[in-house]
Image (cartoon, rainbow, N blue to C red; front, side, top):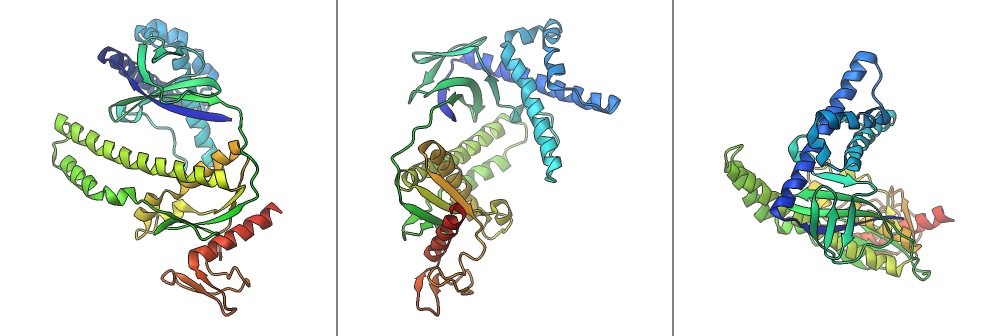
Length: 361
């Protein structure tokens, strides 16, 4: 399995300069390669390939001496990054999705570079990076498995190292317990066992602070240092909210994986649902997709099973007799003519589990 470990870096002023120098050279190279691909297609009707552009790197170093101060594999990864952007573009076109042609990157949108195979090593409390130096790293845990790549990232004035590792799956002891989960807004989730996972609503709790910082940004003159500082403060608060939500999703997903052998979710069209302006903020603040993703990848390594089912009718169908009982969103209790009475979300969670068991069988 592939697993990524993220650690905070504390570079010196000199090392920060080297990191930003590498970022800028990689960004300029990316934009230049993109311009060459566009020009080649306009002139010949055929775009340049990954291998054709990769072969030009030694010649570029002769004409642009600054590139010699960047590790060779980091430059190769820039070519690969552009090629992946093109592949994703063609895939979206083929699938009839919004195309999203690769764009030129401004300084604010190019914040990482990658050592794909070599040029980095961990030595004690230092991360040794080729062409940069020995950067202090906070190893709050040891990376497991074989480290394949190292990505250096700069975000909101903070520096991080992300290690992509190949790890062996460690299956948990088998569990016969099964659970269906109905995702919601007032509560993050309600299970078929009747348990409730509360929605912490981190965005709502920080909304007043966010408004104040957003007003501070709007009052500053564009291009000024004071505006850049205000933008950075606002971005850091948004990052804090996102980290709180991510941490909560990690904890709740771990509880589910440790307890249940089969976990059933609704296969929701979340992108379509957030177009509802009355619920968009609450849905985004709940982090449904993040919870499902975390449970899914943890289940893969733990030997658990995650099933997503079509949610159509799960709230209206009686989990006891199967009859359809129409009710609006305002009605929170399911009452069936057969005499079965239950919480609306709990009834839906039971239906979700039943559908999952049908799919598995």
